Amino acid sequence: MSDAELARRIATETGTLLLAIQNDCAQGHRGDREANTLILDRLREARPDDAILSEESADDLSRLDHKRVWIVDPLDGTREFAERRGDWAVHVALAIDGRAEIGAVALPRLGVTLSSECPPDLPPPHHPPRMLVSRSRASRLCVDVGHTLGAQPVPMGSAGAKAMAVVRGEAEIYLHSGGQHQWDNCAPVAVALAAGLHASRIDGSPLVYNRADTSIPDLLICRKDLAQSVLDAVAACGGDPIPQR
Image 1: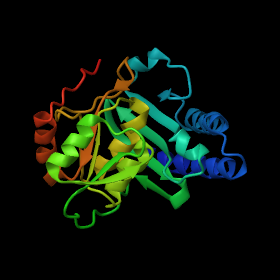
Image 2: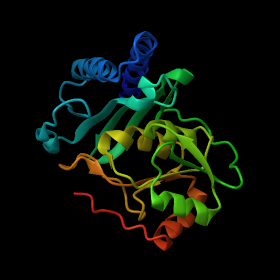
Image 3: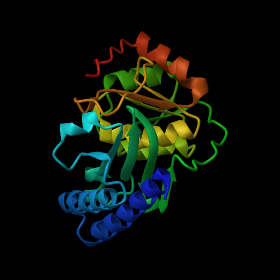
């Protein structure tokens, strides 16, 4: 089985498990725990020589000595999950030499798993562009950039749901400056890149994975033809990315 097929199958199976938990009790802690156990068991069985970085497990820094590292978020959007909303996701990604090469993002409430192996074709863009924003805590920079671009704000929950909304053609821009970790965006970035989208830090520099510090403070996923306009707007609005260590 290919890495991409493995990622897709694990993300889909985990999504099915989480749907059952959400329908039963919607307890985020239970979802995090059981989803993490499932993913780690499947990866260790199928790829025993690879390292794993998961939000729900202690970080083993021996991963830094590995070329191949699976980076997973068993339940992205715990708040949305607990509220029985649909905008949460499962992330399963493989970083190779620090790059997000393989990824699968399951959107269980939509019954779909998007994969870097076979991403959907991008539909025609919307004008004015639609920009994903946090439904509860959009950063000042994102608000200012949206105004500068004349973008239509689209509130949404988890990082994976937002990124996949761009992949699915439900928005054109996902800009984030409020701080994330590698597991928040590795799988979404792999899928976005495979779909032909732009993905970078907010200064245009590349996203690098499997670093000792799991923090990735900011992110831009958007249509390629909009990338320079968004990056220019970030700079004009005072965007100052935090160095990735």
